[in-house]
Length: 470
Figure 1 (spheres, rainbow, N blue to C red):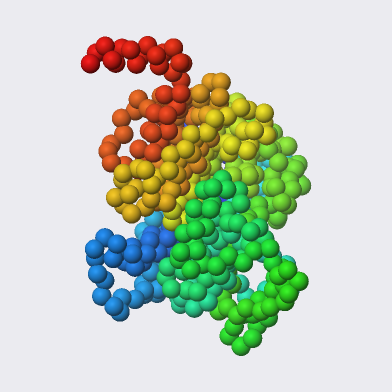
Figure 2 (tube, rainbow, N blue to C red; figure 1 turned 180 degrees about the horizontal axis):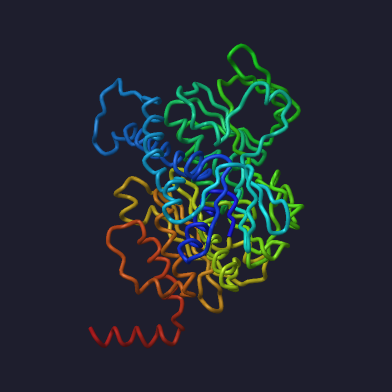
């Protein structure tokens, strides 16, 4: 097996295949570990944790703690910590480790030269099976003057050593929102720009509104529905020329960060020579078994998926190894995929949104528990959140859920497990949850679902029995 790309999908595929006895070559043209380790999950979450610490200090008075004046944010130290932790984690993804696992690692640009061959450097590798795991990259916008003025993406922002005093963030998706809030907490004056007049447009509207209110409290203005006509370099400043509702204006910033999505890395791979169909926007074409139009070649991760997450890259790589080496028939469509946006509060989601279920003609009932009635959330000073769970009206099985909470990403897994096991929401009422925890919001939704299962006759008989037992 030849695996092109040493990000999450490629590393998982290579290690799993080698562990099962296959002879594996892993090809990487840039950095082992891919985006997740180097310019994605790992560095961003290190910054987000530091930003939460900054916010905790500023909000300490509500807990009776008086922080002395003069406390300051040491941005270079924050970035130094991030790089140190990234370096600490990196050996797990290193070429040396994979060589010890029995994988032949080739550092260079891999390119298909035929339906069963890959060229890298001066070598030609022939394969029985291959995996395309080249990931995706940040999208740039064709705004006149932007390239000349200079801009940041997730691929460059983690190289900063000084905090921008004024930061424009273009794009209010997960990356834009996470970094906008983090840099605001570090002390930057952050302005968030978005085409839509709301943030996180893919998420549940009510859930996104909770985060948007948090942004308003923290002083992150949202400028929406405006056209950024051009960018001009004026001394050290980057000037955005904006047109809103027929009126033109300009705003000065010290840095511009783009967070407008990701494009699959399909160029320069020789996919045509391999007989692999692809699209520059949607990526490599795969069937439900993650097989490309060349039956010997599979794809996994961001290069072929709509859900561009590290955990889906991992999960699909496992499917690819099973299907490629053992003629398995594991389908990607069977995966129950959760995700989380790591703002504060976080938004985590799994399965269908209510509107998606209705569009599919699926009758659903939504159960919601706001966190301002959950004891632990009140005690933590984090009442602005909700648990919203959608169930099939006829079967009672969970079809989707959204959680907004400080650590929603930790809470969503309980619902993901329930969905993967085809459990009914009412069954979660019988699961003992430690008290007090914010996950009690999930149990309360289960309690409500359990009560609604009782027919009027059962309610009447239960009432009589309770009365008799007294």
